[in-house]
Image (cartoon, rainbow, N blue to C red; front, side):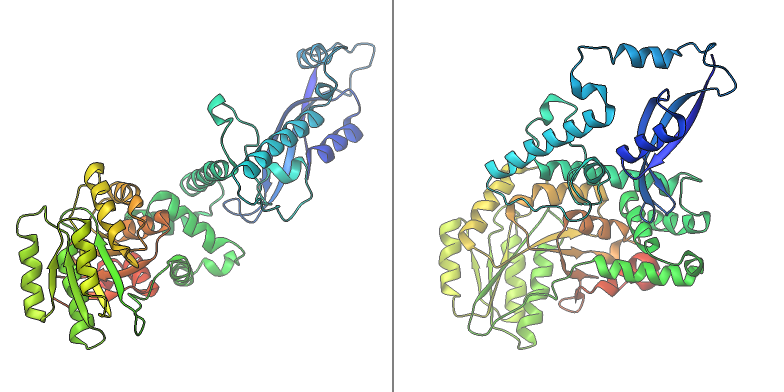
Length: 443
């Protein structure tokens, strides 16, 4: 008896299963089940369906000649009497697993005191929990023991990483779904330093809900890409001062990124322009000559400077400047891997209670190192990022990728050594020009 392999699709497993029974009868055997996306680009515009691979008897052969196939014998062996009822129906079994996983995660959310947001969209059930369209966790049952205590937030994070990897595969694999005419835009972004997953996400966002025939014009596609970068990028508009209130802003970051120079630029901008009365505090007592360097800037601009060696002196200096509009605080640079020194800096900032913590990084730093800086300086609770040394690189994609992955807004960019002229308040259009135009739009 020979068998034929057939494909049956439906919006849900139940629908596909019923369609299989109607079309091929009760003798059809399910060999595999997986989710697919029909149509669309990069998986964004298509419709998710479940596809069953079924084994069907050859209709040219009579029932008397029919012998069970290996797949049928295996199916029959696993469906023998006495087995648990939920195992007799594959669809019902997986629905049960999903419901149990959802109950476990719901219990974890209640135990942690975090409110649980009910998903909007398709009704509860297998279709709503596996396709990811309703915001509920994909991967509803753990594959390893260590995942048993994983909460919904961690599962969503893992899912996002999987989606990003899938987007990269679509963008980089010929014929995987990305039309050939759009592939050069993806390669251009990667060549300009944008990470592969961020580049794939940008291309997918541009193609989503768009007329592909219009986007085939490279000029129009570039304009849409420019708009998407501006939409995604968050900026602060610079330090925001309030009348009658002293605002404290601290600059922190690795060694050699230009914290002291950029602090002097900020001080000159607010003081020389007459926008505010400014006081300077330096807690950088590690680097030889660091305090003297800032003292030179302070004397040139005509600003008071206080040196603080410990948290107590930091509080005293801030109390002295309490009637000023703005206090700028310099901190000791540290390698992003020197966690002990970063924790010491955490104590200094705790004493200062700054309103703004600007994480200063160099635009010429490789993306992997930028990631390490963001991760290890996260304990200081930075409120924004200041990117310096834009004049020392021609690749600005890593800058944008680091901002997207960090989830922090951009406050300022530094384009040279001149005080205060080479400091700019960051704007989304400026960054989009740098990424898409490269060195021709620098500064």
